[in-house]
Length: 269
Length: 269
Image 1 (tube, each protein chain N blue to C red):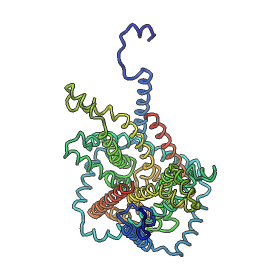
Image 2 (cartoon, chains in turn red, blue):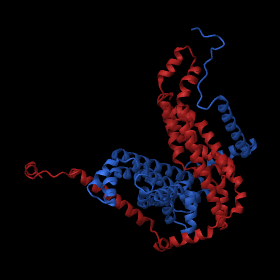
Image 3 (cartoon, each protein chain N blue to C red):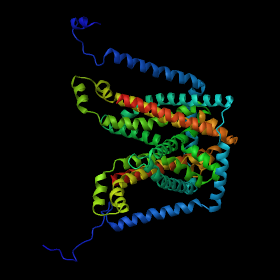
Image 4 (spheres, chains in turn brown, red):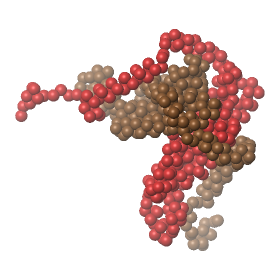
């Protein structure tokens, strides 16, 4: 369409220019092709797909009602799950302080330290907790200790990243004010820096603890302790009513940890 | 107005708690819980020393990462399956999530529907991907289909929750304007609500795709298809140098997925 044509026709309001529209359709087309190719690649057996709803109902029927007599036995592993989450979080928080100081632009000692800090953050975040659990079970043998290390190492990236952001955002003026009163650098750190990052610190810790409770429920699949051990055993022995009991227990602790963490984070904000 | 010496108070740092006794009580409870957790782990120096030795063994047998042509094709096949699972599960999950999100939005759904939507989201969010995956595997059998179903189910909790919050935040004026032209309820939804949340839907879809890639690389550990199956096999066969190759490949894919998703979401906003 030339300029003269455009002037001759009465202008019609269009939300997007034709160029924008072409780009949008092209992106949509790419997305559709990607989905179609992916679906083909999985070569899903359609018989399985069509019988899936029936299989699920069958499973639900076998699970219901939950075996409440079993709830006495899962008390210990449930507590262990929470312990793993707590200790893993504490380990992660302790280890993430130096990593955060390395990875924050205003506290990093030099360029190499900064890159190392960022690398640790990216690497620990990208390896799933279950893979860390596999590794630590090989090293330490099955048990909750392997779980604690898996959860702890996995959480370093998350905690350090958020902590580094909090450190980058502190107000230098407060530190200067404390120093101006004649405080030593340690006192300046205690009264000028720590109070500024403390709310973020508490918030990050409780938030990660909440996430870690969920993670701790599954690391037992590879033998790293917690309720996951009971869950795989029950599934492997087809004790479906016990499985439902465990699932309900997991639901309860996950909701509990979420509510607690939300309450605490609201408190410190 | 001179202050008497007895009335003069020394300055103490303000506390976020009710008073300082409560503060110390809270700290005491936290420390006691931590000690209990530590006691529960039954950590012995002997175990840690043995662990150090096997850690050294593991690391030496992992290096250098191994990649023969046969294993490379195995790796690529598993990785392609994981990415394909993530794509299909994201689309399927988003399609199911859209109605759930509208159900769970307080401002447009009637009360009973709202609670049904919220309940659905809570259940989906509470169980870890691997728990969902292990149960789906029992229902529909081993393979990628189980992974797709598990990840789609998990997508609902994430996507519907965030989208529902966005729907709650929309500008009611636009809805009123559309209904004032005589539009019925579904027309109001299509022309008054959806245009407002459409960019967010696209952004969240990409975001969830990125998260699904992370999870699709591990659901194979419980038999739900993808590279995770190859990983657990390599650990089972003590083929640790190949395990390291797979872990590094997973880290690479996860980071690429994260970068792509961050770039696209940046462009949309």
